[in-house]
Image (cartoon, rainbow, N blue to C red; front, side, top):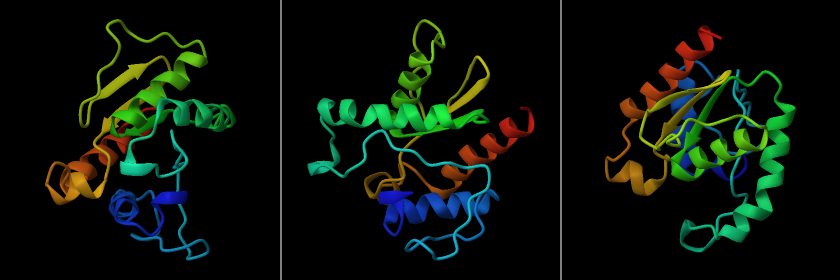
Length: 157
């Protein structure tokens, strides 16, 4: 959970997870606050908040082995949600490292876009950053639609 716990992005995310039934409470302020996630694992393409929230290619490269290892350990993962273009592209990169062929042309990021890639359902969404939520680029109903889609996909697995 890391950097999303206790900030506005986390509040927006956990609220959506709660409304969709993936979390037992709508907020998380700190470890040990009682948050329980169901059928959810949160990973990160970059593990720190760099200046201007723009990770360098070297930061992604340094963090990628951790993301790939986490994915390797998640044997039952079938629905993957990429928060923002960065998260979406990281998912595609992880799949490619597992010798999973991507369609050509490569899947493109778009809010609430769904791609079936072998045994996986990959959903893209705008990141719940303050910039996106305060400007209305991402609203709660838009974000809720992503997690409702994820629930439908999980039911079909």
